[in-house]
Length: 251
Image (cartoon, rainbow, N blue to C red; front, side):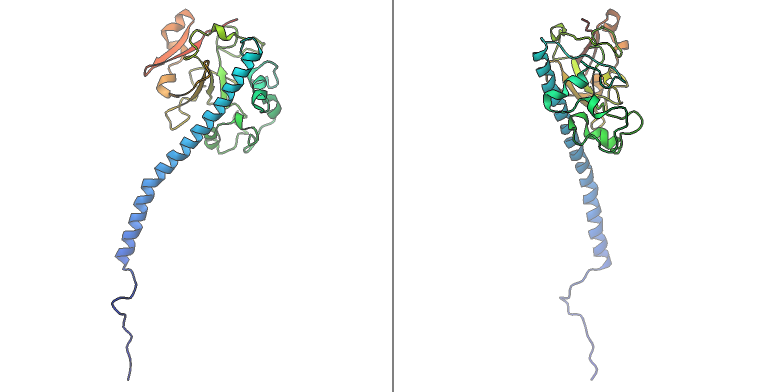
């Protein structure tokens, strides 16, 4: 007698519709979770960059203690080994190499700051896909307030001048070091300042009172040329209730 094999009612199996429903649910969950994961990664990068900024703050405090309450010199682009410049004087206070030691004129390539983490901000590395060899991306992810150069004017100062911390009237509102959008040791509240570094809304700043704050893009702009104080030689910007005082500060 010929037997026929039949599936019992309890046999496991999925219909095509059931599989499609499961796939659809997974796709929805992925779409919900991916933005959250992206935000979490960026928050971690923001924290890393703020930590680097805090190290600069510690270095500034120690330097001013050693040098009669004076800040290091602003320095100038192209002056990699300039004595007295903030980027060569401050790193030693936190056991980091000076800029002149890590950049001697040859491009630093593909994560070359891995052992010099105070020099880089993760968002900048992600932005340029870890390749900082071209396009002026050698090392300055952080930059000094461009009017703290001893001359009382904006612009690089190739001579060594030191500004007294006592000259700063509003240390809580005065930026010292900011995250910079391009490879420059000096920063102004304009295109040089990376106002959209983190989550496309703002960036970290180190202030003269040693505090670290996340400043939104609308707070850091406009630049000095468009502010009322510019006519009197006092550069400031104010937005969203936060006042930023940039200078001017001369010896």
